[in-house]
Image (cartoon, rainbow over all chains, first blue to last red; front, side, top):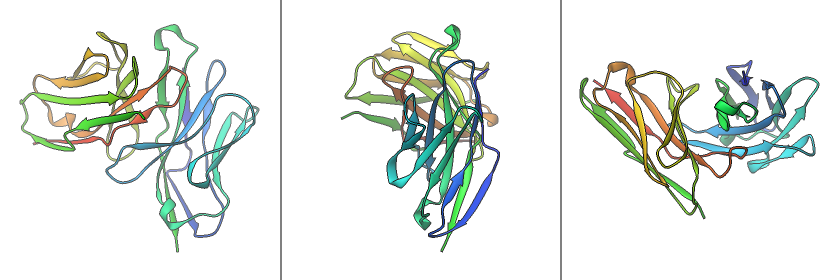
Length: 117
Length: 112
């Protein structure tokens, strides 16, 4: 089955420091990976995606993610965190290699990022 | 540009009452549509998935149903709500099965 795991429920970082939010995946074929951010009582906002190509993907708000096939990881990163980055972050994977579940998007449990001043 | 509308934003319903949440997408044709439920502010559970009018896939057996009466309209329903149906419901759409999904602002449902 396709799945993603976010091993950390909570990540705390000081403003101005680099941040990393971890994600590992399990897919039967080529991974289609995504990162989303959610602010309280709001819908999810798309940040970035990896489909193919360069392993380092750049997205919105200065975020980037590094795809590592050997480690089956897709960690979200930002060189310098802002207090306004504090939110809930979700990693997701597309299930496109199984006929009966084609196109489903599966999410990790989320990681709460807190950036303190 | 494409937009997704989801309403109402909040809803308080008594146990046993019916439910109808509506989601519409503008600016695109034949979108893939999704209903998710988020419990306790964390993980998202995929409830229903639709690739076209009248085509609904259900992920888990439950007290809810979904319908797609028009190309860009996706409705989540229940005949009789349970306390356990409380949660944050999110509608989403995507162009293709491989691409990113875009989410509505969600509906906070409280069943009392």
